[in-house]
Length: 149
Image (cartoon, rainbow, N blue to C red; front, side, top):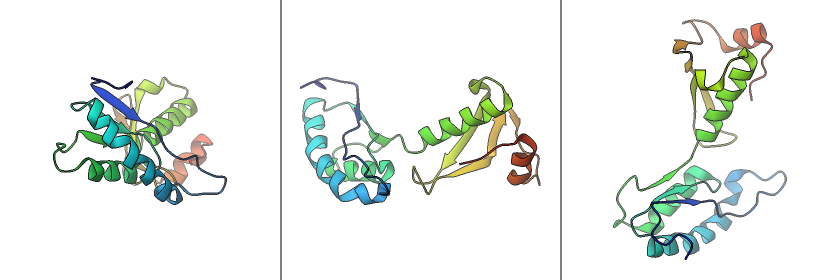
């Protein structure tokens, strides 16, 4: 198998999202795929960390953990979740502020996709909070001509 002896396996397998379909509607189809993939990964790479990228990511991570069973230690199977959303937020802010994206830190929480929410109080630019206490995000967006998600 391709993953034989791997230290990290990225699971990207999943059904394609149809136009207008929510990520949550993918659950049934992708559960079937996980039931096929996870046992094989565990067989061929029994000690590998497994990162789930398939949508809906957070739910598929929970499904993969359930399929793997209690013998797999907690934290060994994890999802990319809102890492992508957080990265997109940081890139958007960096572009808007005309600075290097590595100078921006900030997080998006929730289920990856339509229900994710930026945590504005977590945003730092060069280590300095982007917002002062009491400043509303809509005011910040008007000042910087910024459209947020």
